[in-house]
Image 1 (cartoon, protein in one colour):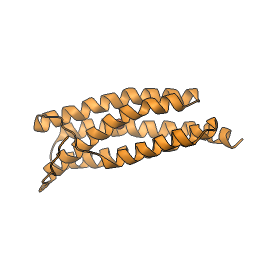
Image 2: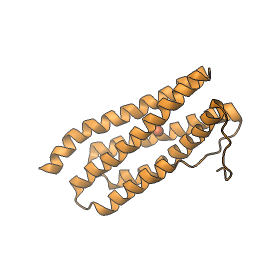
Image 3: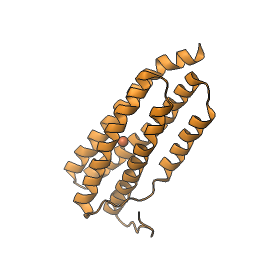
Length: 167
Ligand SMILES: [Fe+2]
């Protein structure tokens, strides 16, 4: 982790700084997902979290590879947003004791994370294109697509789980 503030004077520096934050974000998501897996009592939801944990591990590798290629190291910068989102998810796990309500609250927490990730990768992909980094843009687009698929799957599962929670 970098302890001094980054001096960002151009798009490339901004791009690298946000890649470092994306790496911090993905690492923290790999640490948080096991709690969601453990807290879910819905088989389909648990499977979706498990699958996304494996995908997230590949996202860590992909973002690391982009940093290594561009700057030769894979240091992180703190992503303050994911700290807040993970804290919200932890509160949910602690506070919601009724199982069916907990499942829909886990979906809600996970979708907030997915939406943030989609925004992060959409932005990074566009910046990579502007910088002429075509290979970077393709890798970032592949990660963005997996975040979108994960979000869509959670929406599908929520259609059933929400109804069960109300019943
Ligand atoms: Fe991810």
